[in-house]
Amino acid sequence: MSDIIVITNRSLCREDFLTRIEKIALARPAAIVLREKDMNEKEYKNLAAQVLEICNKHGARCILHSFPEAAAELNCSALHMPLSRLRLLSSEERASFKALGASCHSVEDAKEAEKLGCTYITAGHIFDTDCKKGLPGRGLAFLKEVCESVSIPVYAIGGISADKVAPIKESGAKGVCVMSGAMTCEDVQKYLGEFR
Image (cartoon, rainbow, N blue to C red; front, side, top):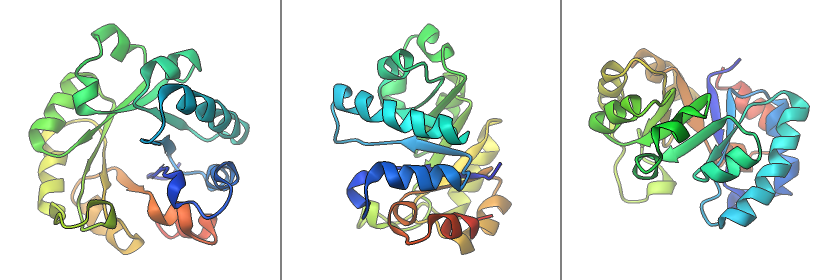
């Protein structure tokens, strides 16, 4: 299994979104996080059902985002949450997911996420990225500090390109998260292959 998590953003997609999901699933990333922030829960759940079907068909792991009830109703045992929303879940709700992740932006966030039962975290943003225009990346020293502060896997996010994988792993991260390239590249199999 690769150490790449693909984060979705259908607004960047240049083709049918579900077609893109199928191509990504076939490329075998560690996981696909369905992160569609502009959707309400009903819309998200409908899309998630289709994405889960594609992922299950190809043996790809799908992690749902932000909507624990939708994940439970769809029998999805993997959930990623913003830390602010993860705090609001009961310990029983958190424990009901086999894979639980949170987005972390400081060492304190990372430690808290681990205490809340996360099985992995994303840390970012590491490098400058168009997704966070005007905000400088936190850098590899920040990533190393986060990795050293927790015992769960850390995935770097933000401005990630294939040439940055080696220094990211040297900083202690388990892997990387990609979004823009995975949503827009001509050949997603080749694109993700460059990160391995």
